[in-house]
Length: 268
Image (cartoon, rainbow, N blue to C red):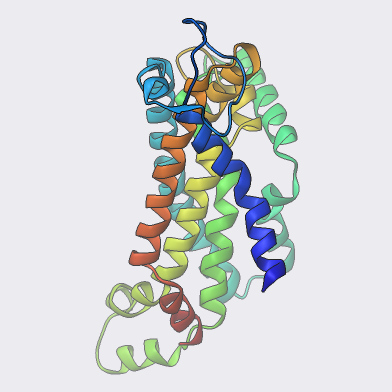
């Protein structure tokens, strides 16, 4: 237990430092400090008031992009999971490996590949996706779909098909059986995959770094640029707000899904 406690302290310590430093104020004669000050000399909220508007705009873009990518991943990943588990297709292991390919390819390579693809499309057609929301969305869908496919497949592999057979015997149509029996039982897997997809899309830097342009910069990329060129404690305040949002998201997901519900769906 002591080793687990030490491991958690080691992992959470950077977050504690960031959150604490975001409330740090110092008497510097009006000069903005350019370093992390922890523990705070005095507590203040001034850095929260100095968060640039461009970071709020980038945060809104990342939220919309993450939700859209998660929904699109569900639309693609759920049918793909059914095809892998129940399709009886020839070469299923190869198809499964191809669907998992985005998890095996470094994200930097994915970003470069999509950038080159978009430039080729722009050269040979009038479609220019570089720096557009659509271009970012397509790349993020490619990046996050395997999470939905994997989580739904894991639930389907342990699904009790006799429940569906019983519904059909009792007179339910295939579509009604899917909506009233199958879908509710696999929803924990869908929720889990969608949550992973949203988080991966939201925190992505390498892919978005290659595809973003002025006006379509995601929050992690904007924060990366702000830390790289001109560090300001307001970046720590911005990161603290996102951390708080992430914790609320995790608590909401636990309330909505719950680990026990996921285990019950897998054992059904």
